[in-house]
Amino acid sequence: MELCIFNLEEYLKIRNEPLSIDEIKEILFQLNKILKIMKEKNIIHKDLKLSNILISLEKINKIQIKLSDFGSSNKIKNETSLSKNETPLTKASEVLKN
Image (cartoon, rainbow, N blue to C red; front, side, top):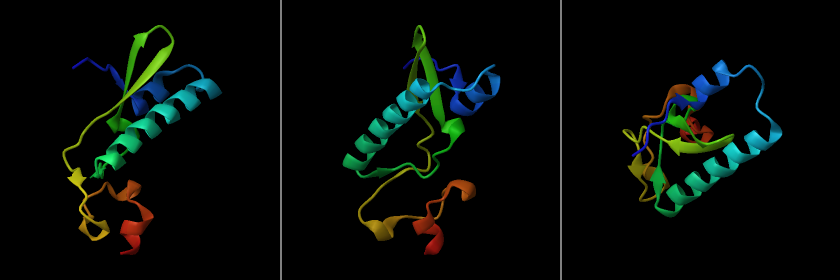
C-alpha cells in the first residue's frame, strides 16, 4: 500500500490555481473506472465524498486517484438492501426518497 499525502478536498484547498480541464478529466475518468469496478462487484461505498478520494502524485504532474474508507460499504444483493448510513449531504436521491 502506498502513502497518499492528500485527499481531494485538501488538494483543492492548497492549490494556488484551479484544476485544468485535463486534470478534471483525468480525475473523473479514474473515479468512473473505480465506480465501474465497484458496480461489477456489487459494492456500494455509502460515504463517497472529497475527503475519501485520495490523491497520489507518484509521477510528475500525474494525478492518481485512490478511493478510501470502505468502513460503511456493503455488498448489494438487491436495491432494497441499501441502508441509510450514508453521509447525509451526499446521500443518493433514491435513498432520500425511500
